[in-house]
Image (cartoon, rainbow, N blue to C red; front, top):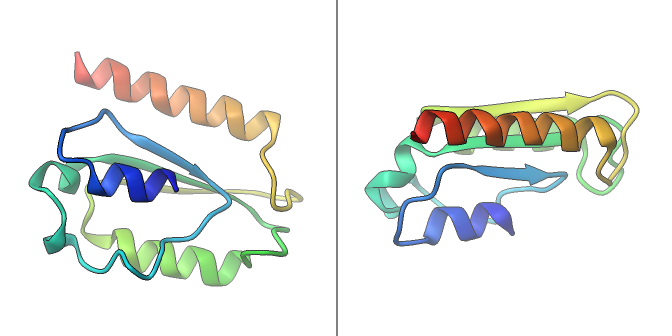
Length: 104
């Protein structure tokens, strides 16, 4: 859901972090989003052991979808299933800090 909100907001935001998710099929092309979205920092954090959203398909789909975005990162965590982890929260927090610093 964080991706959907970030991509459809009319106002610019500093970045977005998504944990263990996928891009909804309704989100089709970069051209359909506001201009500011093309430079949006995006962190997609995903567990390698996620049984709901398999890592290979999720990573391939994410990299294809986000290919036109300048600030995209896909981070995998070994051994993590479909949940958040302390490591993921810490990584996401550092990403947010980077976004805040670059906005100022």
